[in-house]
Image 1 (tube, helix red, strand yellow):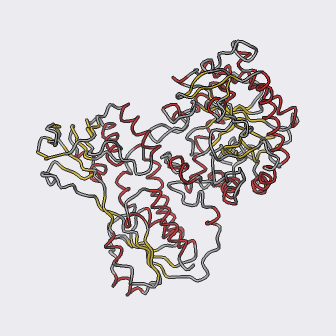
Image 2 (cartoon, rainbow, N blue to C red):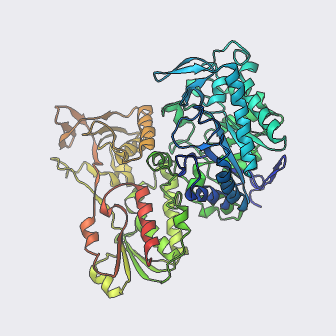
Length: 636
């Protein structure tokens, strides 16, 4: 076997785990307001088990929501016996696929509705209240009662969330715990709560019922460092069966500390593994799990083989490709769809209540994906070979249709292909290459340098057409925009050597700001001008926050409410009388959909659908979703 350490089974107490890959908790997935699991939620979590993960953690499981321990409206109420039946259904689906169901037990403490924590204080202007001795002891027992409900429902283990600033970490961190009784002060006192939770669960559920305990190995500049994190873990050694090492503290807001927990596309794979590795040096009895931005089996194998951790936990990597474990085990690593760490799953969680993915349109739509294929095979033409067109063609072919994809240029990938050489977009380039392989695998005929017209469709006698003609760069009406020193963003991405040392970028959307970061990494001096009062993030507000921090980190100037008046050979003059010197000016001022061209194809075949940017410019998630849905709907 290529990855013997990664796929070595584990037995903890009476629970058997088939490998060392855990599906880390991912929060909401279409829970109802009464905390029940919908069919969609069951399908979402079961899909991870079907993909080969050894354990599947269930997020947003609250031990005391009625007592104010929750911080969101949607959660699973583990204090309620009525939840057990729904949890049993979920655990059964996960177990049937060979994995272990592990609800993540949460109490938000000072950040919860009741704002009860170790000590009095304040959070964002909201007062926090110190728990009494009686409340502390009762809460410990509520963890145990919740775990007992999970065991009754058929879960093979539980995960206690004692990191990211939740209640157990609040007791441990000195900045949130100023108690002078046996629950505060010394290290032993501050870890007493976490240890008591583990022991209470084992007492209630049996020593052979495993407890995974998630901690933050460090809170970085927000609180304690790795030395204190080591002490936190050492106190739990032998009490928790698995010490799961994450990092960061969230609290009640989304700030820099929040993003430390989730490595972004500008950071290396497994950036936070080093904290688990440091902690593991001091642990004698418990196993140690690591988490954070891992997606390649080669890297995960090395983490375990080298002794940095015993288990790897993956959240976003399995959102993007739940079959990652099975593909790695069977030697199909080249088929893995790697997470690009764009945080679209987070950005879309709050409006939808579901986990969705920019690259995998089936995530969060597992029930739709399970629908039987169309009964009648159709002859299908997909016009446009960008992200939406490729997804539409692959999906239609999987449904049993005879599919041809035509692209008028000499290559596939659409507008986004210009970014394939950008280092922090390496996984996006790999995705485009994988999609090309999938087209071949599914038998799609691909015709490059081929423009689709109504006559072309009628001559081919196609039953259905999917128009995925994308969009074109919008050229701003600025004097001098046609100058020799002016480039569209696509060309600057594709040929950065065409940009001089000083570059003025017009437009502070993701295209323009990420280009600025790319050019800075090449040693150039970009400046971004934006007419609006803030960055334009196209719905990707989480990634947008990362980009803002990266711009600040790299000291890239961004000038808002700044309109370009004229472009000259030596720079850009603005409406407010400023002048920005530049060797090259790049415009990233949005795109315009190719709607008229797409609509012109609508009457040439009995079936017709739009996909992607041709009906309105949005983002990659919209492209994959609309392409997938168009392909799924043919013949239905």
